[in-house]
Amino acid sequence: MNFATSYIKWIMLISGLLTMTVGFAAIAPQTALLSNFGETLDGPLASLIVRNWAILVTLMGIMLIYGAYNPAGRPLVLTVAGTSKIVFIGLVLSEGGRYLGQQAGVAIAFDALWVVLYGWYLLSNR
Image: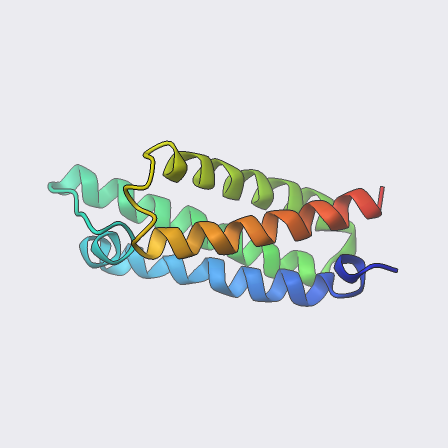
């Protein structure tokens, strides 16, 4: 058994808990944007969209925790969460280095690690 297979429960729990920290943006969207991206968005629509994004990402974290305890659901959970993280990484990188010096840079580094571990697990357990 390889590392990803042996420790998938812990990988999913840790990545799920870290992913859920984005929920802070649902409570304080402007503070979260400033912390993560070094910029803010103005207006009620911006707040609504940021809060919705935060809840969706938090739900992804909850799914990862659920999958840690439900082996039958792991392939779907890891595929959806991994795809979401790949899209986030791609979107941040599409802006060049603009956000890499902010918390978003740290987030994409961790998300890239999680994607590799999810993929390793999924490919090892086909």
